[in-house]
Image (cartoon, rainbow, N blue to C red):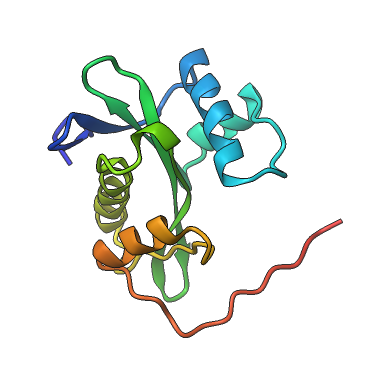
Length: 156
């Protein structure tokens, strides 16, 4: 990560942290989120503000350096636990038209660098088996599938 907080991929992609909610970021995320979840409610300005202002979350966006278009995003969650700092990657998404350009890898590299700076020794993430390209990317970037159970309870 550069001194200015940006990460640049060799193919004209730059990753930076969102520190201010803008209409451009909100609209880009409103288009990206449905690619991750068909059941997620539409993202609101207030919800995005809560993500950006939280000390536990870092929202990264990847932009095309030629026209500044947002190509993808990733949320990094960093928190303290009795066993030490933890980092978790959530909601990695890249526009369909730009997949294969290294956008996802650049986002993950930025998250890994930030997690290390926060003192985390590991970074966790989950990915549905149906997201085959994403799973190949994570393995290529050094993530190892763990022998664990992930449980979810839907809260009413």
